[in-house]
Length: 227
Image (tube, rainbow, N blue to C red):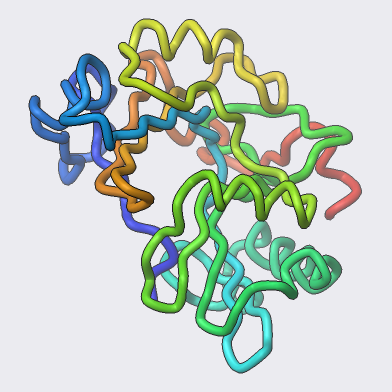
């Protein structure tokens, strides 16, 4: 099972691949201007530039997986092998997961397009939990579980009514994780009656994708203790 699907873009977001998609104008208006009805809840978080990974429980065992759903320990990339080792050492943090559940997040050991300073910070930031039916649980329950089990999560910028991209970027400011050169952007989420209806992202136009992946591996500042 794939760990996480690609999130479509908002209209003014930077597109990086030909396959990138945008949400509809109506969907964007419901995120940034006015809700469809009173049942809408809008969540905005900081978009983190790392490697998408997950921890899944199957038959009472925890497995570290890559975005594609393959075992991280069998990956050809060192950053994924390091993630598998980190999960092995932190099993107690995720042992509460029910069978078939998984927690998805960003693994921030290696620099991709942004260099972070993760000294004293968690190298893993969660942003979603899926149940055994592959459905996202509601965001407030996600936050409560992360708080209860001391799991770091992507910085939350806004929870409530629709908020414009301009104001969301103001809340993003200089970034809230890892003192980045410049933060990558924001992720919007619309929930209705506890169910995630859709998500969208906004990426700044001057972000250089894969800036630190062009030559040798570059690890984020403070990642030494995990290497």
